[in-house]
Structure formats: structure tokens, C-alpha cells
Image (cartoon, rainbow, N blue to C red; front, side, top):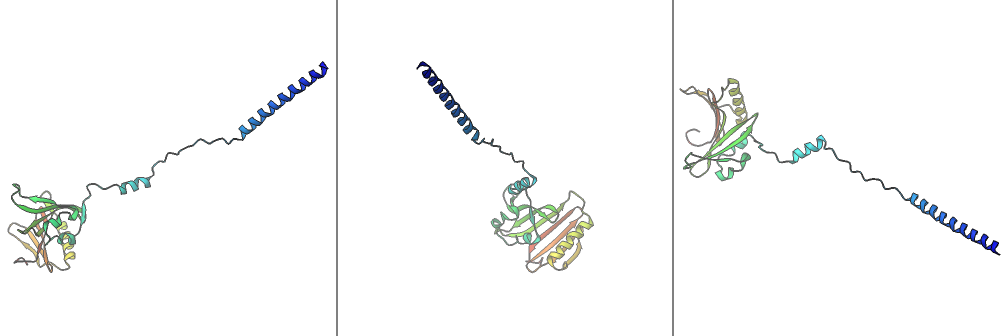
Length: 206
């Protein structure tokens, strides 16, 4: 009887051990089946030349000079001064030194291949009656070729030859004048000074 009991105990122990081993194998197998999560990797984007170019285009440009034309400059004539404040990139008020008299406005524009100051003057009713473009203000020598270039540009804009061709004064200055329907243009050259003026077609000058 004792022998049978011992055998039974041994069999039960073996069964329990086998069951525990089976659970361990199952658990290990289930663990092995679990997918291994890949490590998240965020690639750092290196800005390309196209991205940098796009950012530069999107960014507001600073100190950009307005590219003007003869048509736009001539269109200032006859306008009320306040209407011209924001034209041509914005004009700065121009007063006499003691602030007793308002002259007009000063603009800085790109005209053809360079930058030039543009001045307006107003009458007593604050209407623009003169536009002046200073191409050379005495700080450098003006060549004959440069004068001829501006002569051709104004002739092309006016669509006609000048009314007065190279009128010379006692001071040695030379002046050319083009007559348009409602305005006239003048090119003045005196050694190291070269300027263009635009005026309404009124009075004896017309």
C-alpha cells in the first residue's frame, strides 16, 4: 500500500512540474510573438537652397527703392500734394530751413540704371506744379555721352524732337525742351550738373 502511495506522489509531482514547465514555455512564446516596437526617429530637415530662397522672397524687403518711369513722374503734375505722399515709394515733406514755407516733396527713385532724387514743388493751392530729377548735382563730371543718352530717352518718351535744341546761356549751360500736349520737359546741362524738369503747359514757357 505504501509503495502504491509513493508511486502516486511521484506521478503527481511529475505532472505538476510538467504543467509549470508548459506554462513557462507558453508565456515565453507569447512574449516572443509580441512585435518589437521600432524606435521613433525624427529626421532633422536640412534647409535647402530652394527653402532659403522662398524664405527670402516671403520676407519683406527693406530699403527697396521704387523703380519709376517718366510717365509716373510726369503724372505727379497737377495733383494735390497730399495725394502724392505715398506715390513712388513715399515722399518726404520738403520745407524751408525755418519751416516757414512748404516747398513740396522729396523722393528717392530708381530710374533706368541708377538711383536719383526727385523733387516736387507746389503752388499756393498745394498743387504740384514742378517735378525735377537731379541726375548729377555737381559732385562729378558729366560726360557728353551721358547727356546724349538722356537726350535720347526724353525724345523717345515725348515722341518728338525738342522744340529748343541746345540753347546755351552765358554761364555755359545747355538746355533742350520737349513740348507735349499738356506739359513740357527740359534737360539742363552745366558742366557737372545735369537735371530734368517737368512743368505744366502754361504761361510763356509754353
